[in-house]
Image (tube, rainbow, N blue to C red; front, side):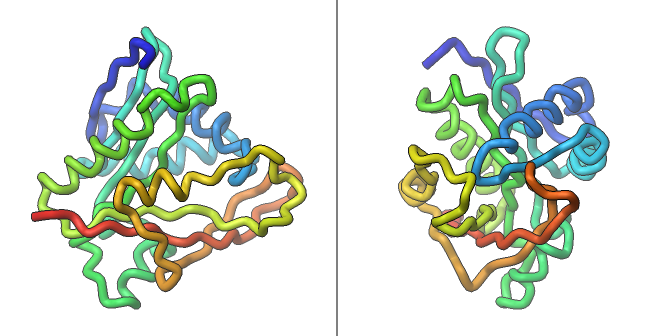
Length: 198
């Protein structure tokens, strides 16, 4: 692995890194499958939800002083309706679920174990905090999507290897603007779920 250092922060402690994290999210999520046409104003609003929450979690990866990757999470009970409602409808208590917001990593740093470290740090936090479940959601694009790269490899195998199961009964939609869209549209999202050991 490259000489990467990891820092774990909660709530307002993320403040010095918010702009770098916003730019990282915009850059990474431009790629397929998210195709996110992001801007700093939206990012500031989105990340502020996590920064204001003392129960949020940020796992940051640095190469020297440069932020090259980040993973976030917070209790599902503190999340927006679009993510909380499917669990409530299925009979899960949001208070029992720790939700992973995102995991973003610059392409040149992939394949070095950083993504695994992100998963392990968030899962350890969730387990130590007494949550019964860890969950995240991923966008679902059609196989024939015109922007799908020929060499695209989904992360399903990696997520399965970490014990997470795709759970189609837990699904939602979330809106953002794709690179080729004039305005936001709803995108289908499916949750991945793992039971945590007490």
